[in-house]
Length: 110
Length: 116
Image (cartoon, rainbow over all chains, first blue to last red):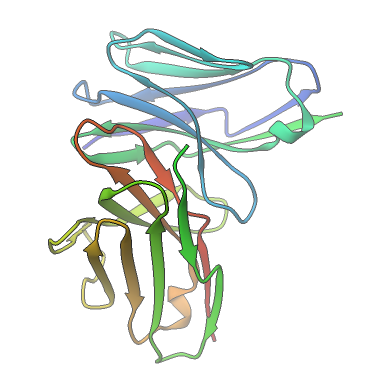
C-alpha cells in the first residue's frame, strides 16, 4: 500500500522566515495531494491541495510543489506568523482513501 | 471551504456503555464519509469509509461490531462505539467528500471520547 514520509517532524522558525515541509510517497497511482493544518484539540483544516497534472500551486503565503517523477511534494509558507504555529499533515490519495504523513509540528516564534 | 460538524465535541462515558457521535456536512452533499481515530501527537488513522446508503468498509484491524457506522443520508453519518472500554478513549474525527469529481475532503472538529 501507499507509504507517505514527512520531514521534518518539528520545525522552529522566527516570525517572518519561510518554512518548508517535504513529503515523499510510494504509489505512482496517487493523483491528489492535500495539505492540512491541525491546531491543538481541533480537526484538520484543508489549507491547499494540488492535483497530479499540476506542478505548482500558490495561495497567498502558502504554496505547494509536486514532482511526480521523484514522487515528492512540498509545502512552502512564506512570511510566517505566530498563528501559523500548528501541526501540518501532508496526504496523498490513491483510489478514494487519503494516506497521511506523520505530521510536522511548526513553531513560529515572535 | 465546506463545513463539517461533529457532535458532541467531548463525551465522558462509563465502561460498558455505548456512545454515538454524529457527523454532518452542512453545506454540501457528502457521498462518502470517513471516520478517523487520532492518538496524542500521532497522525490520523482511518477506521472506515462509508458511502451513502451502503455498508461501511472497515480498515484492517478495526472491529465492525464495536464501531458501528451508519450513513443514512447525504449529510449525516454516525459512529457508535459499543460497549466502550478505557482503551477506546481517543480523538475521533469524521471527514466528508462530495460526489462526482470532487477531490477535496473536509474534516469535522473532532470528538474527544473518555471512557472511565
